[in-house]
Amino acid sequence: MLADVTELLGRQLPPKAVRALRTVPRHLFLPDRLWLRDDEGGYQPCGRWANPDEWLTAAYTDIPLVTRFTDGLPSSSASMPSMVLRTLLLAGIGDTASETGPRSVLELGTGTGFNAALLCAILGDDAVSTIELDPLLAAQGERNLKAAGFAPAVSCGDAAAGWQPGAPYERVIATFSVDQVPPAWVEQTVAGGRIVTPWTSAWCRYGTLELTPGQDGAAHGRFHAFASFMPMRRACRDTAGSATASAQHKGVTRLSPWLVAGGDLDAEFHLGLAVPGASFAWDTSGEHAPTRLHIADETTPSWAAVDHDGHSADHFTVTQAGPRLLWDEITAGYTHWEALGRPRIGQYRLSVDAAGVHTVQVETGCGRSGITLPGEPG
Image (cartoon, rainbow, N blue to C red):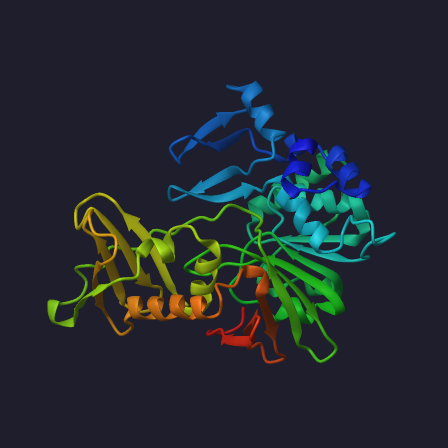
């Protein structure tokens, strides 16, 4: 697995990270039943006792492993070791630039306990606190850690509130994605410390945020082009019949739906910021059109459908309804992204002021362009 991790990261790992990866037995942090991705995009179960060789191979392969399903969808997983280590290195843990590393780290989302074990292997048990919302996961994670010989402070609670008893922390690391930085994370991190968290939006789960709080209660940082887990789409509801015909707006667009939802992660990241609350799902069933892009809003009955007739490559039929004309917003957001020079995720900076207001700045060759994110912090 070490060779796989090194190849994916594209660099030699620092000695501390290598020792941690070799010291922490990943199989001790995995349940008896795993789910592995198959060639059709689904998941197949893999049992420790029914398929011992396959199970052990999966445990020591640099892949994410689904450990729990809820309502038919993956709800808990063991992240790729390479992504875990990349996050730790981004937080300045295990790199060669520091002799001792941070003296206090809060991990948000204990999960299986594997991430916390790597932290303990690098920094020592006394430096690590970890919190988990699910009582069963917290208890199992603590058992896994004990079985592997580690004893960080494990707590059960809402990670959005941080963990005040151990504050302040030099590092706060989340193992789940957020679209707003909870105020408690900034408050519980020392000035000059570091917060690292995967980022998400309704449109696109992509990116990792590195944030540094200052003495004034504000925090500033940047986005990086990786995340702790694979993007996972939420299915949009089929809202095509949820509004009356008189409320629908029909038209034609030249903007291809594949440009905004076809896997260009930089474009999708920008749209997630520019069109908050909008999510999408593809429909190739042929019920409405050969290919349809569904768009829905999280908080209002607004929806849009962009249909491809299977022939034309330069015009598509659009239907919209509700208080938000979502396709118009998507078009404006994509046009803005192109006007900025199609910036990549590493050009985006985030500031959170003392009141919790989030502002994104896009750095381009012509200066900066700002986006203020809506919603309450946390």
